[in-house]
Image 1 (cartoon, helix red, strand yellow):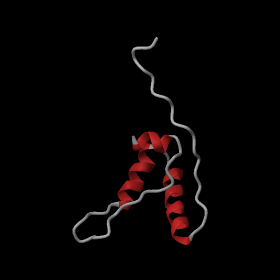
Image 2 (cartoon, helix red, strand yellow):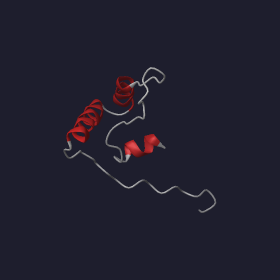
Image 3 (cartoon, rainbow, N blue to C red):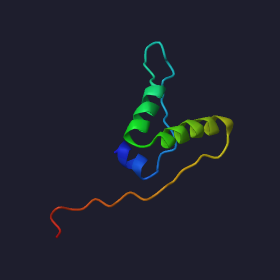
Image 4 (cartoon, rainbow, N blue to C red):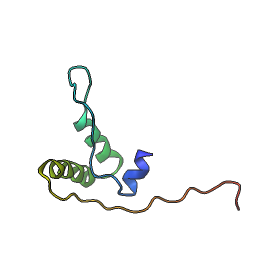
Length: 76
C-alpha cells in the first residue's frame, strides 16, 4: 500500500517513532536509497528536503494525485 501512496504522490517524507535508538534500528538512509532505486533519485531528495521543511516549519512539496479505484473482478 505504501508504494501506491508514493506513486500517487501522497507521501511527503519518511517518519518513524524510533525514539529509543539503542533498542530500535532506524535506517533512514537505507529507506532513501531504496526509494531512489525503486522510484527516482529526485524523489528521494524531495523526501529529504520535505523532512527538513517539516522540522523548520516550512511548506513541503507534495504532488498529490487520487489513488486509482480498485477494479472488482466480478464486474465486466
